[in-house]
Image (cartoon, rainbow, N blue to C red):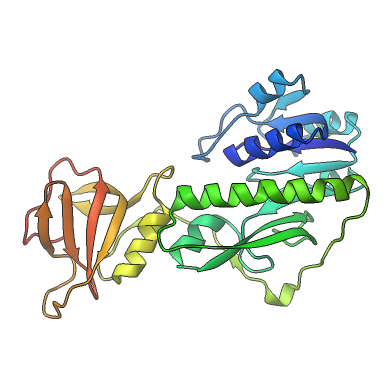
Length: 293
């Protein structure tokens, strides 16, 4: 089974590495030279060079040059893991077995952008690792493999990324032989159960202490490293926040945003219902007790 692989992030690197370990027939790889939009960007070129796999670095797959290169590899199937733009119909219909995509949600639920971030922001307790056959829609194709996983209270952006990657690699090991022997099954998605998450903006990452402590906690852990952090404004400066803790308080007469305590490098701030301890941040000057954020 001839495979063309497409990807440009760390997840792409791990999955390509897994396919190589499984001795899959990788006949070509498309990746990017760089990407300012992906905090987990990873070029696949060095890995391909190590294993003598034909590889091209492209900005877009929807050009005739890219299409002809992929076409020349005569793929039976394409794996596209970690590519932020949609593929045109001509490419989706090129391989006889289709194009396998990946989305870390319980499809048909939660299609769309920034799935791991939104799952944490919204406080989901469970999600799924899903491989599917791509069509012209957004994450709407028939499901090849889906495995649910819990989202724990202490999970953050990095731990959830690692958890999903580990599960996905196990799924590949399971479904690859079925693809090779044509014994796999596909399960159409039920569109009536679907919703789609939007692209987030810089305003989605702003901490508002009118929010409850759990909502602030979820926002911060969703945007923690390797992302750029949630943010708050202090003395006309934007401060990045990477880790907070919820603090139970009984202070119904204290306004939200008031600094309650400053201890070494930690700042405790009243929010709507409880308080938030800011643990990891980039304050250059700590606020004082009694100030407002």
